[in-house]
Image (tube, rainbow, N blue to C red):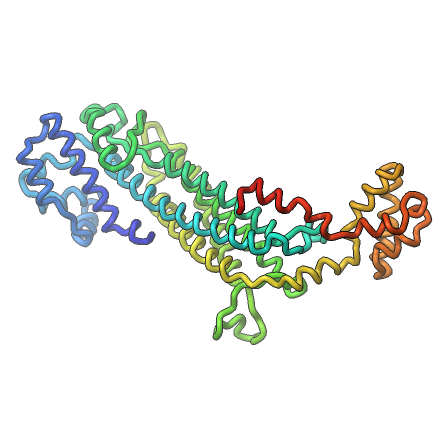
Length: 422
């Protein structure tokens, strides 16, 4: 990924755009074939030399053109013929962004596969579902992983759309009117680079494309953060259901030798904030003045490569994290029983309604017993069996039947089938 964003690669991509434009002009009879042959044979770039020239020109494209001209010689008069800087910059950038997105999509696909394997392995491993951080009803760890599997699947779709949106070039001149370059040149160059012509442009490609690209990256980063935060929560000492892999010789704290902290998850959580900030900056770039101003340029030199490199790094780290995640199935089962049956309250409520009690009466009966059980430390089942109001509607056997873990997990297989996880 990093190699895509080097100055060397950027100028090589710009050179490719320029040479393809020369080929198109030659097809139109505007550049002699002999001149094209010289350009293609001699054209080259030297990054250090370009930087030296830019110190004087304060214009990177002009420095690039001068450096190439030093290699080409007299025929360099045809180089950059009829073009403006953004014809080269934006088209080359689109190629780089498309290449970077291919890497990101590949990384997301790897994570999807890792999550699929974890979901299948722990499909029927029961654990507590929590809402507001409080025990709600049982789920399975596999179901939790299946949720993230589907979310990264949606992220992949967004990334693919973003790649399609950015895979456009423009060779339309200073204000997009093709005044000094024909639409054929744009079509020719884009075709050679695997891009589509923008159709309508100004001096630049419109920045809604780049904003969508970076927003897709930011949303994917948010998914990784969500997964990281989930693992962090489940790794709390008092929860202890999962744990980041802790390598031999690894240190958790300079002062507390016992610490094993979820540092990868915390790192991913932090980096996702940068991706969101970069996406916001990209959105700010959309509203340029008239046919173009340069306010977007300095921002994009930071946010586009940074976001691509960061997400690539985050994906690489979280795939390893998921693959090596330590899952404590025994602790998950233990935590299910912490509330001593309170998690089955809804089942009791519904059975009371089926037996003829009103919803309000049913709720009052179960809530009263639940609060007593919680305050006394007794099992909810025991409190319900002592309730005269319960006895009015349900037998001992019917009450006990409400406290079955399997009841809550009976549709897990169907959920997996619907999710396409096999």
